[in-house]
Amino acid sequence: MTDAFLADTTALLERTPRVVRGLLDGLPDSWLDTPDTADGWTPRDVVGHLISAELDDWIPRAERILAHGTKKAFEPFDRFAHTDRDRGVSLSTLIDRFEQLRRDNLVRLGELVGEDDLDKVGRHPELGKVTMRQLLATWAVHDLDHVAQIYAALAGSQDAAVGPWKADLGILLRREGKG
Amino acid sequence: MTDAFLADTTALLERTPRVVRGLLDGLPDSWLDTPDTADGWTPRDVVGHLISAELDDWIPRAERILAHGTKKAFEPFDRFAHTDRDRGVSLSTLIDRFEQLRRDNLVRLGELVGEDDLDKVGRHPELGKVTMRQLLATWAVHDLDHVAQIYAALAGSQDAAVGPWKADLGILLRREGKG
Image (cartoon, rainbow over all chains, first blue to last red; front, side, top):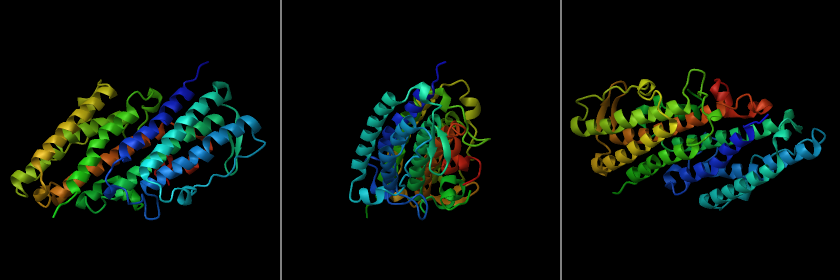
């Protein structure tokens, strides 16, 4: 039985750096200084977090499932690793770095994981038993979640500028926990 | 006094078709059949709605502000015009159409609106008095809102696939009014 899951998931994962670059690279600074929520992240923070996940999350966890199954839980993932690491690095450089890491990781994924591995089980330190398939689906949805967060941050920069239209713009209302 | 608003807004508006194409064109069908919420829109519906707004919303309203000020309210905008119009049209063709309309409309915007026009006032049929600047800021945030909706729809296609990780993925929880 063939399974399109690996090909379909890879198709999404390879698009993310392209979309992030197409959206953010060269975008005027007036768009880029607002976080997605009051104590949230700017677009630059989000790209930093995506870099952290390429370094420490997806591929190391896939390797651990293959090497140890459920016997050795995944390492906890530091959601704020970017804060110190990326200080003073330009957004454009961060995008380059994310693109390179993603490219390398998709090559590694192709070498590492075949269809027969998708139902293999590992152990998440908090969530318990998870499969390789769930890990890879989460990699893709994590991309979608955080690119959507970039969209909320960009919208937030225009919160006052839209005037009375704000009432119709869910992306602005949700930043404040409404709508 | 120079004002970067027009240039900065245009910079966002010209990116949207590029991002939509980079994300959706050629993406496997397994990603594309789920709406953003139970009674929401698929990515294809969203592109159709963006086409409707290019046809009937932004430029016609800017023209009305310049021609009539507050004397003649904007025409109401049909949020569901795409449903019949786009039946049977491929996603790829819809993206082409959106890209062409946006390109044409940005040329028209450049001809039509200068810095001196940004504080001119028009009348929205429900929201009342609005400025040209608010209209153009809303054009851009409307893009962001609906591309974020595409992201939610894509994520929704993997709702079951992520298993226990769903609890950490806000983009999935929000589809169900949680998180």
